[in-house]
Length: 447
Image (cartoon, rainbow, N blue to C red):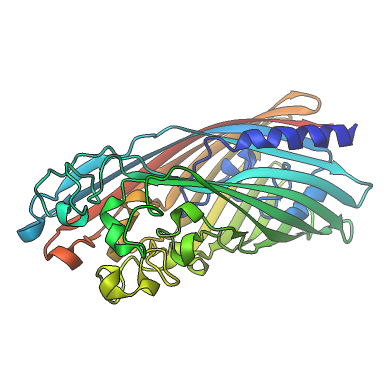
C-alpha cells in the first residue's frame, strides 16, 4: 500500500513544473511547505510535514507516514526606470512595469516509515526562479540605442533591444529523502537532489557586441532551453528536551548542465548552477501550546559565476576591446553581481485548540544586488528583504488537515548609475523595485 502511494506521488510530481516562479531571498523562496511559510520560513528544527527534503532531511523520521499537497498563489510586482540622461544618452529615459504578475507554485511531499528508526520520502519543490516581462517601445528610434542595436530600427526596450524585454527562469528540485534515528531523540538524513531548470530570455539584442560571437544566435530570443543537474542535502535533528529541539542542514551546489542556447549570455558558456546553501535552527516550547522557532540560512550565490560576477568589467567595452574571457558567456563573463545572502527567520506557533493551530512569522535577508549592478538586474530585480507571514492549520478529520499561509514582502528598491554611462557618458540613474504577496493552501494526510 505504501509503495503504491509512493509511485502515485512520483507520477504526480511532474505537475509541479509549470508556472513555478519565486524571488524572495535572492531567488530562493522564503519558506518550503505551507507550515514553514506561515512561520517566516523557520523549519530547520521542526518536524511538521513532509518537506524535509527542502528544509532538513533528518526531520522526516519524526514525521511518520504522511502526504502533503499544496499550491501557492504568488504575486511579485516589479518595476524599473531610468532618469537624468543627457548628452549622447538623451532620450533613453524610461519607466516600465513588468507584466506576468501572477504565478501558481505547487508543492508535494510524501513520507513513509520503514520500521521504527528509518523513513523514506520525497519532496518536490520550486527552488526558486526569476521572471520579468516588460513591454518594449519605451525608447524612441533615433536615440543612442541605435548604436547598440547594430542598425535595428526602434523603438527600443529599456536595454536597447527590440520587442519585449525579460527572462523566465524556473528551477525545480526533486529530493528523495532517507532519514535514520541514531537514538530516540537524534536523527540524521540525506536527500539526493535532482535539479531541473528551464530558461528563456527576450529583448537583449542591444548586448550582441558584448557576446563572443558578436550576434544574438546564442544570446536572446531563441526560446526555452533546459538543464539537468544533481547535488545533495544532509541534515541533523536533535530533541534535547521536551522544550528544545535543534537542527542543521547543508546543501551542496546543484551542478547543472549548461544552457547551450544561451552560451553567449551566462558566464562559463551558459552555466547556471543552483547555489550552495546551509541553515541551522532552534525550536523552543516555553509552554505546551506555544512553539518559537528561529532559523539562520546562508545562500552562497558567490559560488556561481553567472550570478555573482559583476556586470561591469575592467574594460566596459565590446569584446574586441575587452577580451573574450570577460565577455558575456566568457569563462569569467559578466553576471548579475549578486552577493551572498544571510537570512534570519522567526516564527511562532500557537495551538489554539485540538483542531486549530495559528502561526505568524517574520524573516529578514540581505539584498544581493549592489547599486553598481542595477542595469543587468532590471531583468532580475530580487531586491526584497523583509517578509511578514501568517498561517493556520485546521483539522478536518482524525488524520487530515488543511493549512493556509499568507506572505507579504515589503517593497524595496535599489538605485545606481546606468551601465550605459560607461559607453555613452551620462546615461542617468536607474532604479529597480519590487514587493510581493502570496497566499497558499495545502492538504495534509496521515496514513
